[in-house]
Image 1 (cartoon, rainbow, N blue to C red):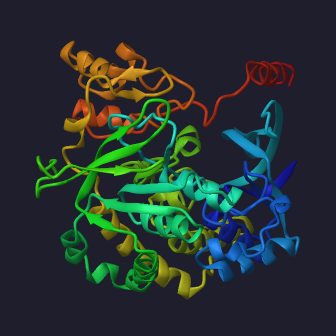
Image 2: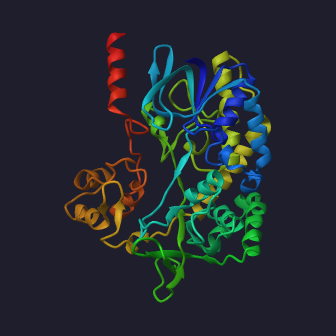
Image 3: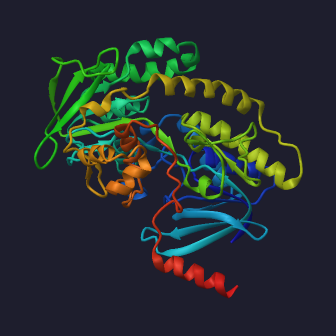
Amino acid sequence: MRTDLVVIGAGPAGLAASLAAAARGTRVALVDGATEAGGQFYRQPAAGLGAGRPEALHHRWRTWERLRDGLAAGAVRVLTDHHVWCAERGSGGFVVHALLGPEQEEPAEVHARAVLLATGGYEQVLPFPGWTLPGVVTAGGAQAMLKGGLVVPGRRAVVAGTGPLLLPVASGLAAAGAEVAALVESAGPGRLVRHGPALAGKLPEGAGYAARLLRHRVPFLARHTVVRAHGDERLTGVTVAALDSGGRVWTGTERHLPCDTLAVGHGMLPHTDLAEGLGCGLDRLAVAVDAEQRTDVPGVWAAGEATGIGGAALALAEGHIAGCSAAASLHGTAPDPAPAALKARTRLGRSAAALDAAYAPPAHWPEQVTDDTVVCRCEEVTAGAVRDALDLGAGDVRTVKLLTRAGMGWCQGRMCAGAVAGLAGCPPAPARRPFARPVPLGVLARQHSQEGQS
């Protein structure tokens, strides 16, 4: 199909961008791999589950209703079940390549004059002994099971790691009937206090979650971390310990918490694969954009977590601004974003930067990773193998990858790149993957054949 603007990603940023551009007379196609729009933040349970009160699982439900009703008005063409694997320049604009349906074998293309990337982010999980046991899930995974499947991953859960996502996950599990044995946060209260002015707007939301945790009598262990997960066939418990002021485990503070579920996460990272494929520049690990959310590639905009992790409210503001800018560029007019969106982006951007600084993972987490701990799950590469590669002279993630195959599996390093970088003692770097997801060779062959005939 052909359109003016293709928006990739139907989360908060993509929804806001699509509606803003469509309201300004732009033909918009909104592409997403899920079966329904909403992204991870507004993930909905399947209709067949008969959820009576899905709003109970969500924050800012009325905002979702406004976005949903805007889509229902019909100005935006929504293409769900489209798994985008590549976006490239074509004649007269851009071509977005996708795979259709759950099997992801049938190809589809969207041709557009401009592209807006709202590809979101993915969770960062740092390894520790026992993290591959059944029963250990990511914090976002536990939340997705609850929102999308109306199920809890277990009866007694520990929620651990660092970052603001842990609060809604713990309170959501408790409200759904799971016993939350503890919320284990590696950051200490002092970090939040140091960034108090920038986080003032987040206090009501945080206080709300804290009140729910108190109501469900969930113990909160600040400046603690998971040292080990225990079990043979599946998870039976975890050992947690306090951290000293330098981020090292405080010997003698270990305690055992029986549980059948561990929901763990250490923040999020931006999805930049499609942006890098288009040649967009990066600012550290995020897509670099200007004041109008334009990338340095003409005709390409980006918004939301892809430009830096900041939460749904910031993504909505950025998406609106990006959609207005893209529409103005396509029509040769001046952008007219709502002043409230501009103010919100400034204010929420400061909060996001403060949260990022306050919730940094423990500085010395690699010291707790034993040599037999699997780091790359796809290729079953252990921490010992990574350390052997360092002894052989590897000094960066790419060389470790070549010597050990860490990051060469199905996920292409999304799960392990940060861990490998931490063990190697170097900062994480963009992976520069040629495709955003695995593609059947038959699809590539057909595309090559069609290009040869054209």
